[in-house]
Length: 87
Image 1 (cartoon, helix red, strand yellow):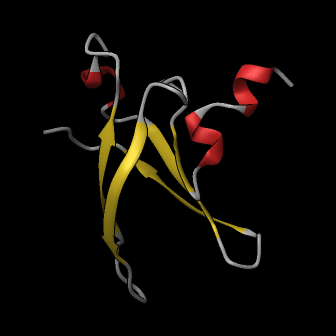
Image 2 (cartoon, rainbow, N blue to C red):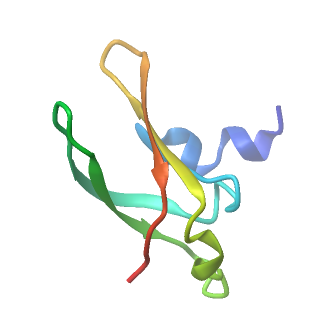
């Protein structure tokens, strides 16, 4: 494994945002909130930050994305969805 990947900000987070289009280091999760329920659609809103002002966010719309949440047990919980908008 590359040393740069081990020491990256994304590696030290309890909650990680990933998308196959974006480099994992380009977008970091700042905040998220969501709603889940039985027999209903789920919805999550994410606040992401990036140091790259040239990142074209419109290329991410319609693309799959996921959150990986590290639980207290050390296991991971995954939330998968599609990016619908940026504002």
